[in-house]
Image (cartoon, rainbow, N blue to C red; front, side, top):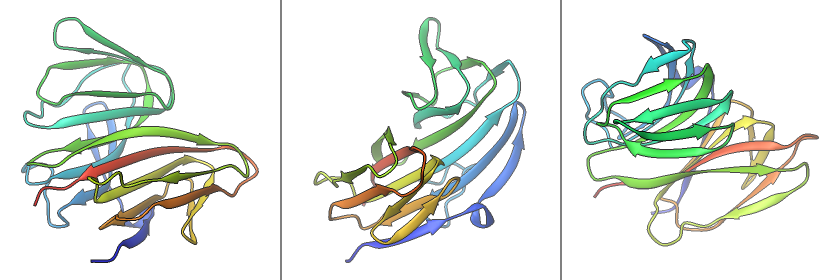
Length: 194
């Protein structure tokens, strides 16, 4: 199967309200997956946290990655595991563990369930700078979210707030910052379940 590259934007996202702000689903896999029913392998989203203190929804069986895009966030997982995040720093935690957060932020999330696995990382490319993203043999899905700036990936322009998806990812992809300012990226590398 050859790779399929698409760029998603706000017109394709689904936004809903939660007790602490709003959440915007950028991508769900499989395509007919349902977040509320828990019938998904991969969910990528962005949320605004408008309360100074909020409790995360309990999601047993979900491996979660969270990165702040704007603002400082303190999180306490369980009784005493603490994470402090500045913009473009990533934390990974068990979605079933009680988690409380402190701070008003905009964040970027990766949720993995039902046999999917992967990781999230951040990248900041200065104007004109480039990098190469490698599938590393196990990942078959790549998602690159542009939190700030603009990039070009394999002739696909991706602007601020847009998500590039590469399904059936098998080959290295070059990423170039095309704007006059730095491009700040959230990168999700995923191995979907068979």
